[in-house]
Amino acid sequence: MADGPDAWALGHQYLGGGFPPLVEQWNGTEWSIEPSPPFSTATDILAFTPSDVWTTGIASTGPGFARWNGTSWTHIPSPSLNRSAELFSLSGPATNRLFAVGTQDSGVLIEQWGGASWKVVPAPSPGSLASLLDVARTGSGLAWAVGTIENNFGGPLIERTCRG
Image (cartoon, rainbow, N blue to C red; front, side, top):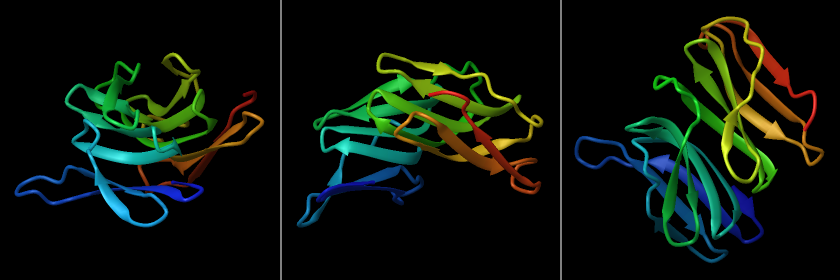
């Protein structure tokens, strides 16, 4: 994710038996490796400033979020009670207006950050095998999410919020 001369990249690195997240930051001149978020698997990264960066991923307690303050990551658990849930994408026009999407046992999973806490947003799901894989949020507050029906083998799935 880029913001002016600042950009962030998220991947994984091999460390003798595991593939923990790898986070790198571009400061306009060079790349530097930053501390990894507290996840065994990280799935997306969203940067607003060098000291306000969000990630989604899976921790030992289940899906969640981590927020970088310029020095360290703070883990914020997902409000989903489903430990097998997964979050794949994160988007928002401002640090206090975010959406995250993924999947859970009952189908699609959508979560919203309003500046103080994450909450699960009720959403239609065409079945328990449906997944939302990416989300984009407009400046007006609408969010568009895309995914698949039947775990990548079915048809396309597109959902949109009715209000911001």
